Image 1: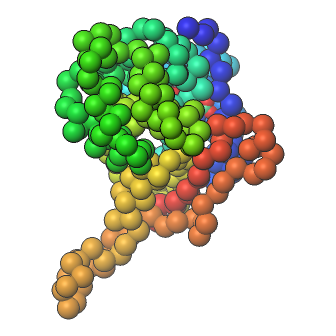
Image 2: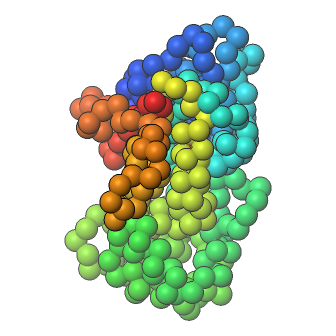
Length: 310
Ligand SMILES: C[S@@+](CC[C@H](N)C(=O)[O-])C[C@H]1O[C@@H](n2cnc3c(N)ncnc32)[C@H](O)[C@@H]1O
């Protein structure tokens, strides 16, 4: 358990500049976390404008309310999954939307949440601990084949079958599943591997966490809604931390980057050819500079993509 909500914002200057915050629009931060990005957005938005902050973790919402109390009149908090963006906000209402995906340092550092490698509580891993199935319940429900598939597909893990068997068989299956005994399983299965054990553990934890929180489905639904919530010229800034997140973002948005949506086998366009809703702002993705990489190891894998509503 840790009390203070500590999280160093990643790609802060780059993402805030990319949002191009103007005085006449409302904005949304879909991943409030420690409030680092929200604080900068709230500083910059115009008089009488609103920042909508989403987080499914009540600890993030409460910490945000306290840290950002001086912006009380400007911020509307949504303790909801960000897939509810389209239901919460009207279409073409926002000047910019930010996503800084994944988990916060606070969630990882809290030993009772199940995101860290230590802990003897039943494994939880829910970002919103008030609803849904926790990681222990999830692991006890699924089959060995299903677990192997998610370890392979979510985190490209080798020996996924053997690890799934070790996690779900014997003592682990009947006892409570904790971070500590999940770790023991990982250490045993990968004992002969040269690869850094901590990085393997991070990938195993990530693969399970992604399922417990339906992370890819959340991204797809929310990012699609985000396109519709933006006004013309509005910016969509998305920071991803691994290839599956990035793929979900790119695939969801690629449909909105095209003018023509016709089947490529048709000889002529019949859809009107006027469907393009967003354009990429930068040819290249934006990554943390050397100074940020030196001071914040959690920025290592961060990639920022910026789109603009046409
Ligand atoms: C990397 S942190 C954001 C950090 C924040 N930008 C900052 O600088 O402090 C990601 C946050 O997004 C939240 N989150 C992740 N997926 C979510 C979802 N589908 N719906 C709502 N919140 C989500 C997590 O609970 C976490 O607090």
